[in-house]
Image (cartoon, rainbow, N blue to C red; front, side):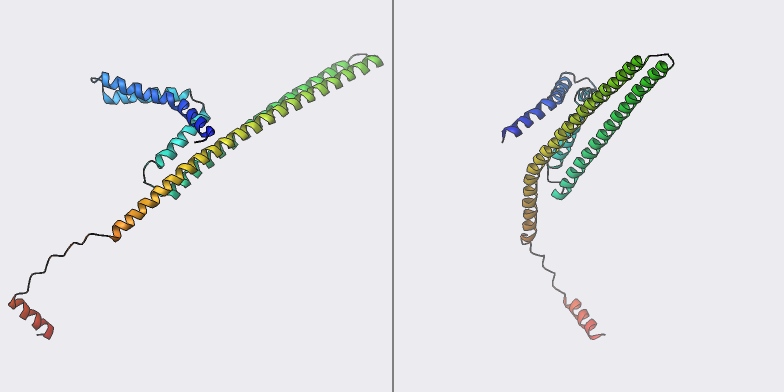
Length: 240
């Protein structure tokens, strides 16, 4: 196993370890309290696990749920390998759609805030100009005022460009990390799926061989016809 897969496996264990500890704790408490109702104990276990899941980031929780679903599908030979792959493809397609939807929402919100900030800044500049025009000012004062406004405008839009650049950089990194995680998950799935497909083919082959090689089971001998029955059949054949 490569170092990358070992690291990812350990990471998954670290993520899932709170759930494992919760299950272990719940199991121990049920043994020490036989008088408790099983229904109440099970409900408490589920509530505790639900609380622990809240501490796991949503994207990690989705990853774990998807991985658990895939592994459960390949734990036993219940479904055709193609069906299992279709389920996996559906999960990844849904993850991509959710991610792209979130990114569009974040981009729209950023652009909305950016536009609001820009409009507010330009409106403030206009108010300053209107206030300045209402006063008597010398040529030198007007020159300094408009030069100051121009400098404010340059600094503001330069700041907006920097903020936009940082946003785009962060978005590209999020996309890069997300699709890298998808590829890693697909590689893990493909490895497990190849083993599952091999087991499935061997199982189908064995079933076919069992159908072809059936043990010989002699049929019970028919009872011999009595003389009276034999005469009746002969009369039937002659049409009598």
